Image (cartoon, rainbow, N blue to C red; front, side, top):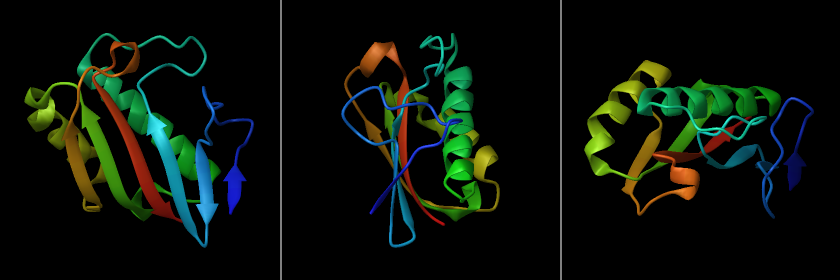
Length: 123
């Protein structure tokens, strides 16, 4: 097991690792749509989604992977009514690649965020 952390990656905000690699698999901890420097949340749902996908791209790249190597995504939504929009944005982000996925309606998320994502990928 190897903890992956680079200078470009945001530091974990609690007692966890942002990315762990084990036997060629990457386990990426939940990513909230908070700016890694200011800790501010974007104003719109689309901006929140754009930010978590941008963070995911960075983490994958820094760990030696890419979005087309994502095996599974877990998306937690504070409002299931957002499902159609997240589905469209997810499809645009991944293109022809279709990782396994679950969308979980959840109670309010930390800091008033509308979503949180986590992923499993390979290197």
